Each structure stands twice: as structure tokens, then as C-alpha cells.
Length: 520
Image 1 (cartoon, helix red, strand yellow):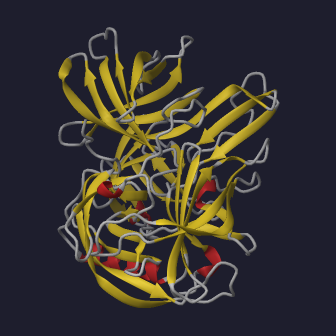
Image 2 (cartoon, rainbow, N blue to C red):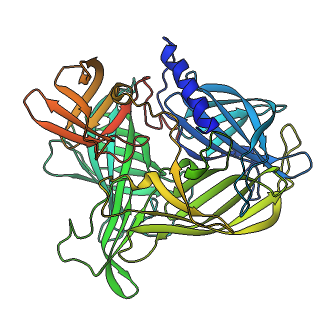
Image 3 (cartoon, rainbow, N blue to C red):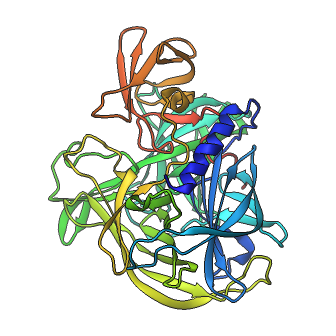
């Protein structure tokens, strides 16, 4: 067992034994975060944050007092919106192309405190420093493409959940973001029982990177306006109804996929699709099959590990962040002398080619030096050298029954053969009750569900209408539920609330799985 995972298992047991634990009305988004005041267009420090349930894990890439690149980790429990945990430094681990070798814990420079105000903003206080604002690093690209959230070509489907003032679920919409014949962005909203969509024209605020959609007129009970921020697969914002135009309500949601069946690639008509955790088979939903299929498979952002380096001792880690068609990758590893360091690369992530059912990125892994040390004066870093090219690939095997392609991938470090990687799950208890307890929405059945009972090995909904158990051994991550009217409902458990036909609204601790209320 990796020491990070062992720590998570320990902290989860603490959570289970804690009767009163403050729930959050948001979940910090996994991925790359930055210190707001240090964003100056030059290399600096950064954070790779991962929150699952109440478990917090962070990798910090920074610099020693002598200017050398280094990294630290911090693991703890979020009590509401704040966590304080020791920063840990390691040494002696594997460098690129070296023989296999385990690292060991070296020292701690002190505690770090992180607080969050919503899923994209917060503060950090490093040892010897004053609290500083942090924010989720989001790629702002306005080049039109199928994969670009901010300059959509083709159609993008989204699940939207409307909340009330107390951040409780009230309503669901299926949304399609597209461009009309005049090139203007618009969104079509369909309720769970609606037969026709309400379409709102939208404008993009480039500075805030968010859409403002306003209905020219809205029937009683219809949507008057919608403000949406699309951030790495999640949606947040606010909605107003025609009956209460001065009373905006919070919105949370997920991006499902984007597609363009009329794309032209290499001179030929092609089906181009960006798949957010759910996969649509080529040709399954198309009239007039295009010549080729280009699928951009979006991985689950956050902490990834090399599968065969799970030895029970410290090893290398990856912080993976894919947004639009850009991959940002930090690798936390060691130099030939065993000293901790980090390498970072960014570049284009896209389909590996027609009909490959694979997506990949080839990135230069760069190292930096001279940046700010813990407690040291503000200063930017500079490029030092490149370790070579790293290749990251995700693919879907048509023969496998498991649809969660984004749980697995391969990485090819400089001087090494391809290695399997997997998403690190910090909060994945084996008991079905621990995974189902909480609040859900099933868009297919148009049903709002709360699970809070366990009886005779079955997990039951609060109203007693559903009784669920794990599915077959061939599909260990699927759940089979029997309804009181004898209907059988089968769905896959999500990976970090992604890759399922069901949407988790709140987890077993009461934490909202959305990004929370966003400022203007």
C-alpha cells in the first residue's frame, strides 16, 4: 500500500468515528491551483489539490532556499472548509530512466493551512508566510473548436441542477450549448418532463470566462436568465425564473460530451467528439455515418500514480489536468542524487487518430529553478533544463465491459518504457452503503433519490422505493437496484462523481459535489 493511501485509510476511519463533522456546500475542484499574487506570466509555485469526501491531499511544487526545485505533500481532513496539515518532504526516490527505487520521508518544514471559499477559490498559508489567495488554474482559450468550452463548435451537452437558497436540489435541466446559423452561442434547456426546449441566446464575458444567457421573453415558469461558468468538466452559475426575475438561484452541473458530426478532418467528413467520462459508440447515434471518428477521451483530473510503483513506500506522483485540448502535467519525482524535484509540461491533448479510440499528448518535461522558497521573499523562477518528452495516453478497449476508460492510462517517461497509471482514489470504501449514502439524481428516470438505510445487505432509499446491491462480478463497479414496482435499474458507480448515468448531489458526509456559489 502506498503511504498516501495508508494515510487516507487512517483518516477515513477517523471520519467514520466522528459524529459531528461540518458539511460543505461545495467541493474544491481537483487539479492545478495557483497563488493568485504570484501569477505574473513567469514560472512560480503551484499546488495540485485533490479533495475526496473529507480527505484532503495536496502536492506543492516549489523551491529550496538555494533555488533548486522541490516538492512537498500534505494530507489531512477538511473540517468544513479548512484543513491544517504538515508539509512532508521526501528523498531517495526514482529519477527518469533509473532503476526502481523507493523514496523515504525526509523532514517537515512545518504546517500548511488551506481554506476554501468555493470550489475554485481559497487561501493558503505556508510556514513563515502570511495567508495568500489561491485559485483554480483554468485555461482560457477562445479558439473555436469542438473541444473548447468557451468557443463551442458543434453541440455540447450538460446536466444542470438548480438549487434553492439553502443549496438544496429543486429542479433538473438537460442543456445543449451550440451556435446558431448566425454564429451566435445559444443554450437550449429541456426539463425532465418537457417535450420542447427553451432556447436562450448567450454572450461570453471574456474576462470572467462565463456565459450570460437571457431570454427575449419567457412564459410563466420559464427561464428568464442563466449565468454559467464552465470549468474543466463542471458547471456553476445562477438561474432566474420568469416568475421571480429578481431572485437568482444557484446552479451546479456536469459536462457530458461535445460532438460535431459535420467536421472536416484531413479533407474528409468526420465525427469529432470530446467525451467527458461517458462514451458513445461510433455511428450509434448518427444518420449518415461519417468516414472517420476522432474521440478525445477526457481523463479525471487530479492525482495519478504509476501502478507498479505501489510498493507501500513513497514513490513518484503525477498531477494531471486536462482542459479543452490542453494538458498540464506536473511530475513529482527525484533527481539522480535522490533529491526531490518536479518537472512540468503542457501542450496539446487530442485524438490519437481516426478510429483509434485513443487520445494522447506528447509534452516536453521541463524543470525550473530560482523560485520562491517557503517563507522566502517573492521571486519568479526561470527555466533550467528539459528531461525530454513524456507521452500520456488514454484509450478505450472495445472488448472490455468497463466503460470507465478514464480510470486507466499509460505514461512514457523519458528513458522508460510505457507504464500503466491510474487515478488515485482517496475515498473509495468497499462497503456499498458508504458509496451510496447521500443524495442523487437519475436523469434517465427523472428521479431524485436519497440513500440512508441499510438492511439485510441491501442499501435502501429514504422512501423505501429502491433496494440496491453490487452487480455482477464481471462489472464490480455497477449497482443493481430493484424498485418497489419491480423495475430493475442498473447504473455504474461514478469515479469521483464522474462516468455514471447518475449524478451525486451530496456525499455521505453531506458535502455538495458542485462548485458552490460563484462571485460575479
